[in-house]
Image (cartoon, rainbow, N blue to C red; front, side, top):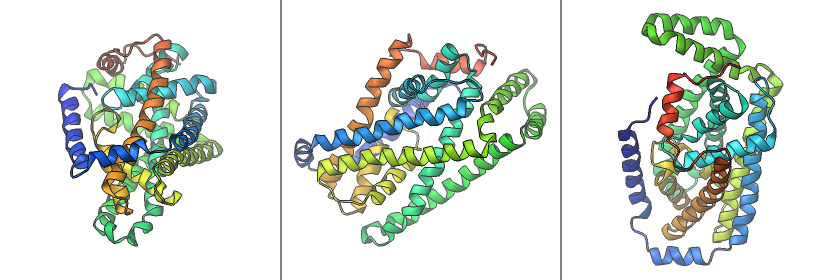
Length: 346
């Protein structure tokens, strides 16, 4: 889908609302005091765990891409870092498209096939996030300050799990019964899609199914799931490092719950990098656990810097090395992808 200007403005408007929620009724001098007294060595330790998680993402992606082409972990790590940079800088999580474009241009893997592997990544990420929330939600029931949140969080997580399980069922059909499922989809295309678009959509689905071929092995699927759990555990390691830096005392399981809820809120369309949505959700969750508003905001701001700056700078360096510029027209890339005119065969 081509990105429209109103999509961008809507994202910034949503971010503005959440930024107001994050920064209202806060003593900023106290927030600054907490930040200046933070022990940054703990943040650096947390970043070690975080980048281990990014490296594990490269391993997971290699498993999914193996049926298409064998790529090295260093190569995939660079592309994953570029994807993070794209999501943090460009609207509409354009980093995912950038990853697919890079594999098309440099590694001769079709966009639709590589996008299929990225969709699988996001599906497993979503399942782990839902698990983090649902498995740890009982912690909130014992907190008086959380009573107004528990029902809403449980409802969002439950409905999210239902939706993603439905998607998972569709993926299983594509993985286990690719030919019958493609026939069924072709029937839908031939009866519901205008004639001039049918061939392009059908070809896209064919390559998409090729991108799912790695999941036809139960062993490979289990590896993807285990890597996904390890990835999110490592990312929570950064939450833990920032917690130690700010002198907050929470259990690791509580931090995993916070991580899960924050990422649920990040599903709301907003400006790049989850501007506002991340900040409001992080602050609110810490307040639920009894952390004061100034300390909660200080923690969230420091966590944002740790999550955003290092990976974005690293991704930008790799991006420029690939021959792109930070002024790359992402909308044009979207148009090329939508047209399918630049798709190489694999």
